[in-house]
Picture: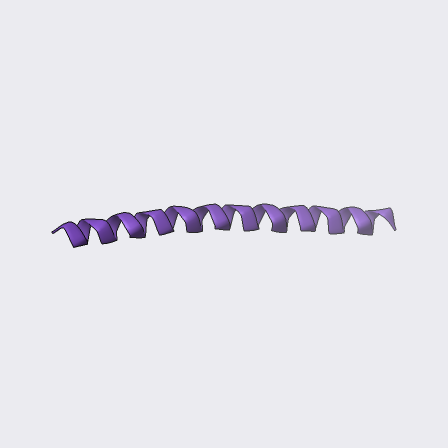
Length: 43
């Protein structure tokens, strides 16, 4: 039974890390979009 709990823990940790990575990528893309919008606005 402890293997099942360990497996759930590992899966939860992987999903949590994946969510953090996606959040970081989304923030990076949002900054890039804002920078591009400013560049277009300045033209």
